[in-house]
Length: 416
Image (cartoon, rainbow, N blue to C red):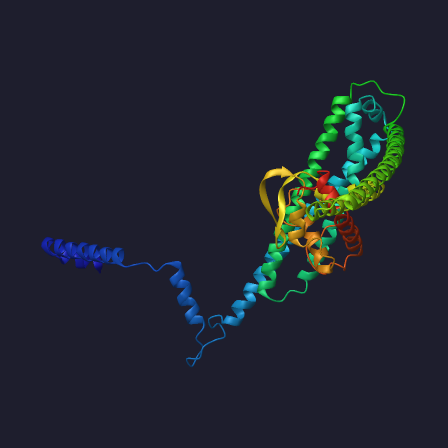
């Protein structure tokens, strides 16, 4: 039928139909190219809108999230972040424990093995190992303290319910990580030092004694040297006391003779002006006698308490550039020297009360202090009597400071 239809069409009609079809095809193609294609987000949005409408025009439960749900979502995200940071800190702590165990194991092995005997053949490297051996218990305590601190953070975080608590927890974990990484770096350096000593001493000939035996010998030598120093100090103190007592006795006799002489002259003087001058001289001599006698007695007591003084007042004798100023901080100065006695008085460290003891504690532990606190217990604030060791330490320190304050300045052990 189609063949008969086309056979009956003229050539002109066929060309016309063909051109019409081509034109319609061109128009359809142009319209299709100019029509915008919806992106994925629009399709998802439309799909969501369509799925959220139920028959009858009712909305489904997929409404926009309300504030309460947003808060819950935020808290959950913060909890996940805190858990993540705690897990990282836990891994760091585990690595630090393992590093500490490795160091202790290596030091223990050196105490008796062949390599340790080679190290014992070098005084320099033996001294380094001895120092590290004595130093490690302190580092072990620091690792233990960080482990306790970590468990405390984990325990507190389990009770968090608010976003601000998780924020604060993340901040504390960050500070904790800084302390942990600092200790880990220090232990890494110690491990490297031990390794370097082992490498250097590997070619040394081995000695006949182990490091452990040499440490025992060194400690015995130190103990004997300490006994000698103590004995010499006691003998020196006894000699000084004897000389001071003799000098004080002689000074007293000389002053008494001067007073008797002045009194005798006073009896023969007729002019009131001369009498007044002699009376003033007598008072001056008497005052001088009293001062010298008191000072001589105080010097004797100072000699007796010197070791105690140097132990408790060491944080003030040390050289530095800072001085107690106000609040809980020290102020920098241009002059290097010991702590100023007048600065301690102005700071309130000599006031015999709990407040004075608190000032004394901050004079040692305060911010900006560039001196060591030596054996003074750490203090950052709070009731001063809560820590019995700190309280007893401060009581003794203040008593010694008040009693010998002028003599310490005179001797140059404290600045004016």
